[in-house]
Image (cartoon, rainbow, N blue to C red; front, side, top):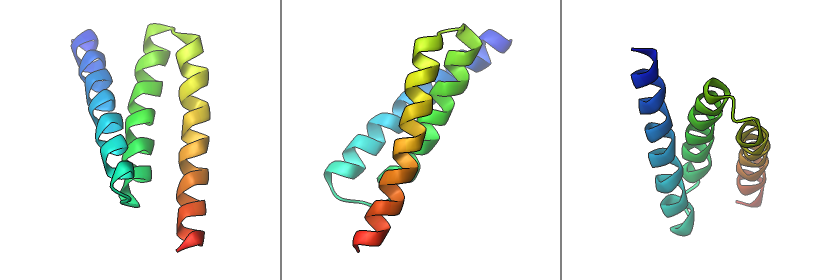
Length: 76
């Protein structure tokens, strides 16, 4: 049961990250929130798998999501 849940979480995260790229390419500020949500899902999934390089990458990306969102709001 938990394997199915975690796998689904990984796929949801992947989908959200892809949608975030599309939104960013079209200059929607919501891209940052979408990316943050997707990277959070992937971070949890990576922790579950014990994929520590992916955990570090997604933790860094979460920080960049926050930075990008704050910067984008400041530039408007």
